[in-house]
Length: 96
Image (tube, rainbow, N blue to C red; front, side, top):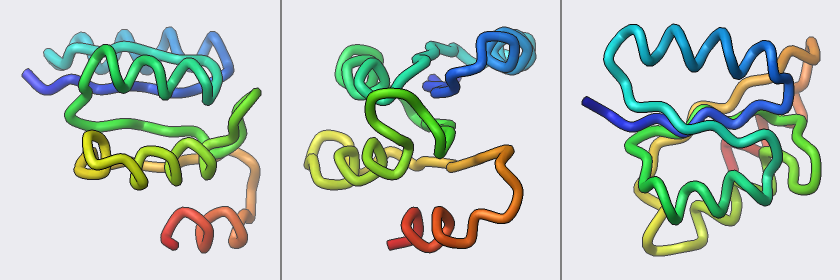
């Protein structure tokens, strides 16, 4: 089954969504900040990354940029999310 890296800094959300994804048969690893996310990508080699925009250390946009710059990780699909309301600037930055 597909491997998913779930990057979120709120522990309750990590637990709930990781459990739900595992129950659907996915292999899930999580990271709670941007720096750990980049380490986990290199170690775990996910098929998909679910990436929060607001993260400690490196925010989601910075993580996305680093992933897309590296030959080894630029192919990994990334779904960005936020619970911060209207974030048009974040959406535009993620698309770029």
